[in-house]
Image (cartoon, rainbow over all chains, first blue to last red; front, side):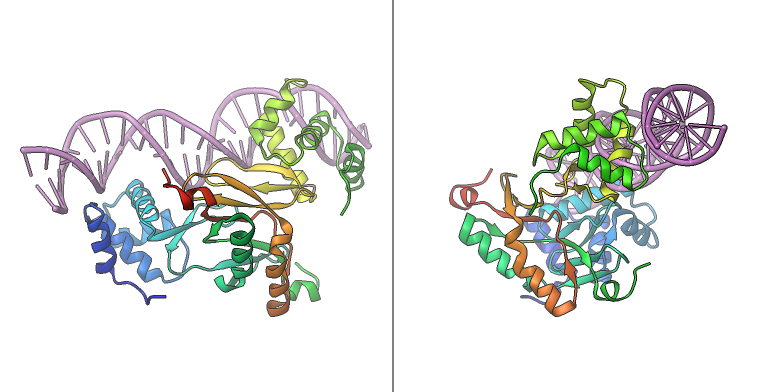
Length: 147
Length: 147
DNA sequence: CTTGATGCAAATGGTTTGCATGTTT
DNA sequence: AAACATGCAAACCATTTGCATCAAG
C-alpha cells in the first residue's frame, strides 16, 4: 500500500498513543528501518544499537520490541527453534523452507489469498496471515540428491 | 489416507531404523496415540506417562520426541510463545488464531491446497505444509467488541 | 512534578547436555 | 559383551521481572 514510513511518522504514531519517545525507541526504529526486510533478533538489534548507544540494555530492546509489536509497527517471526526475530510490519511475506537443504525462499503474500478467501467464506474469519513457514522440498533437492 | 497406526506398527518402524525399543518410547507413543489430535507439550507427556511409569524422566521425553520427529512420526507445533507441543504426524491440520480473543480454530489441510499448487507451479517447490498459524480476527470478535 | 521508561541483576521457563549407570539387542 | 538409552543434575539460552533511578511530558 504505502511506501516506507519515515522514523518521524512512526514516532508521531507512538506519541499519539501516549508513549514517550526515548533514545532507545528511536534507535530500535532506526535499526529496523535500516535493516529493510532482514529479520533481526533482539540481540542483533542490541548489537547494532550498541555501536552508537552502548548503554541501551538488551532488556529495553525486548520491551521496545514488545511495544512496537502491540502498536502493529513490527512483526515477530519464529523461524525454526532459534530466537524470535523482528521486522517492520509492512514487509509482510512468507517463507518456503526446504527440509533437505534448509534453503529459505520468500513467498509473496499474494500466494495466500485463496486461503484468506476461504477462511472468510467458511468461518467468517478475517485472516491477516503474518509469517507462515511452509515446509517442503525445493526444486533443486527434488532433482538431485540432497546433502 | 490411512487409518490410525497401531503402536506396534510404529514400533516396528523404529526398530527397522535400528532404534531400540524401551519403556519410555513405548509410553510416549501410547500417550500420543491416546491423545488423538490434541497437542501435548513435553511436560504434558511426562505427566501422563508418570501415572504408570513414574521414573521416566522429562529429559527422556524430550529425547524421544526428538527421535520421533526425525523419524517423521510426530510433528512439533509452536503456538504463540508457550512450549512446543507435539502430535502424531498424520493428524495434520492448521490453526487460525484470533488476535483479539486468542481462540484457536482448526483449519483442515485441504484449505491449503491452492497454495501448494501455486508453489509447485511457480517455484517447483513441493510443499508439505505442516503447522501453519494464521492470525486474524474471528467472526465473534468482528461482530462484538474485542477485549 | 508526575508518570512512564530504563538499567541492572536476578529469576524464570523451556530445553539440552555430560556423565555414570542401566537396558536392549 | 557392546552399543545405545536413561536418570539425574547442572548448564544453557532466550526472555521476563522487580526495583531503584532517570528522563519525557
